[in-house]
Image (tube, rainbow over all chains, first blue to last red; front, side, top):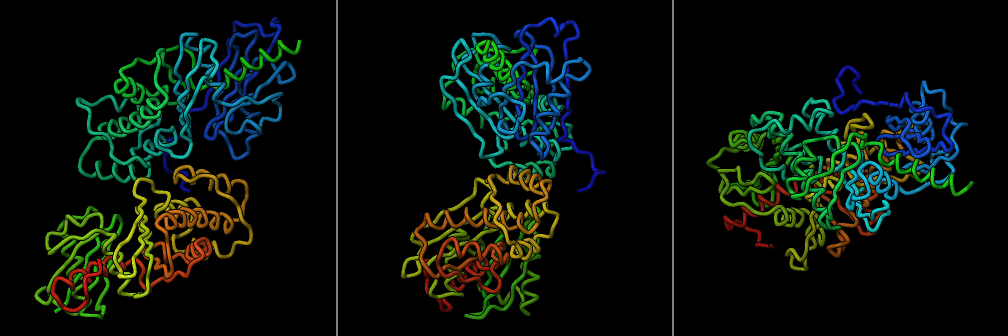
Amino acid sequence: MSEARKEFWRWKEYNWHNPDLDWRAGKIRSAGVDVGSVSSQAVVMVDGELFAFASTRTGADSPMSARKAFDWAVEGTGLTLADIHYTVGTGYGRVNVPFAHKTVTEIACHARGANFIYGPGVRTVLDMGGQDCKAIRCDENGRVTSFLMNDKCAAGTGRGMEVFADLLGVPVEETGELSLAVDEEPEPVSSTCVVFAKTEAAGLLRSGWPREKVLAAYCAAMAHRVVLLLERIGVEPEFAITGGIAKNAGIVRRIERELGVRALSTGYDTQVAGALGAALFARALAEKGR
Amino acid sequence: MVTAGIDVGNKNTKVVILDGDRILARYSRPTGFGQKDALREAMAAALDRAGRRWPDVAAVVATGAGKNEVDFARERITEVGADARGALFLVPAARTVVDVGAEEGRAIRLDTGGRVADFAMNEKCAAGTGSFTEAMARALEVELDELGPLALKSTRVVPMNAQCVVFAESEVVSLIHARTAREDIARAVVDAMAGRIVAMTRRVGAQGEVVLAGGVARNAAFVKAFGEGLALPVVVPTAPEYVTALGAACAAREKTGDGGKAHV
């Protein structure tokens, strides 16, 4: 593979911690680690308050990816794994979190995380991950009441967007904004399959469409795809989106438009919602153990 | 007088020139944008190879995804109808035709009279098409025609979980990182592909003999896995990717009343 070529799909890894929070003063320090097929997140909470998190790429080795995410989240805080009372693993690779005390499904974790991020009014959660997409209904406690999932097909997932970022030569983080820079909405790309949509998009580019118009057509198709999933489960407000794609305004605006429902907004990082839910479960389990 | 069939596929355009029961020439070139001029050029090149000229052509029939772009065709027929005719021309005892092209897979069951009794198509998803093997060859960094021979060297069965081309690509990369032998990955790819086509073929109630057409039929490992999976005798014609174009040429021959009964 050529290393010289710029990899537009390559989203940035990041970490964050709250420097004003003294973790040593906390009674229960819990961690949640979400090992997804594309990215891994770790969240550390101190007495139910968000203390630190990181989002990294999942490597070939899931246990290592889990550890990498955790270590990076607590980097520079003085906190180590030994200081954590309880850890919950979740995500596609949840069985590969060797330091987890327990595993919980990512469906449950995303509902719980969304409940924390967006508040108890959330009834419908759309989690748009790297290689899957889930429509989840939940109650005021963030407990799952029903869900639907697509994990068989890349259409409507972050991976599909990465493929398009590469095709168009647009950094994946910028695809959403750029797709909104059109005067008029084009017809959505007609192919469902990402491979065929790519061929279709290449044809549109050759016929003279600017990149933003092609992106708009793809975002519309992707939004339509997930709206079908949402409609099958039924959307009850309040509605929230989690996962990496929640940061893509081009997708979010078009989902809202098609559904006729606004998605809640937040200052929290939506990509760590699953790990955050896991950390909340970890806290509850630690309390129960006391 | 000769007849011609032109199959404008998603990837390649194929032309077959037929003189009665004799195939005079086969010609293939990338479809590209499928512009009308390029299609005329393909036709001219095929005629050149056959040693004939435009006035010698009694009729042209077009088929394939881009058949409507062929403005010199007397008629257009479906790929299913073309596949049936082409397979019967080559293998008169054929009861099932399976055609796996670049962006479409088809399974067709023929009745005892050679008419289409049932068919199934994969056109929405790239997983059961040539795009799948192409993408996987790219991920493995081998040429497409090396994938089959590589897979045949495999001694170990490695399961592939992903069906989607995009996800399977990531899975292949993970397998490479996990130091899985390349021949075993190649086999996993071919087996996964064959599994999908076998399932589609079963859906139409396949019977022997099965004619396997399309470019993917050139992959020996695929042919082996497909035959084993289906447990029916499988015949691969000499130039499998030309079966559809040949069928169109047969349909053109029917138009001229020059032998050949209408099968479909």
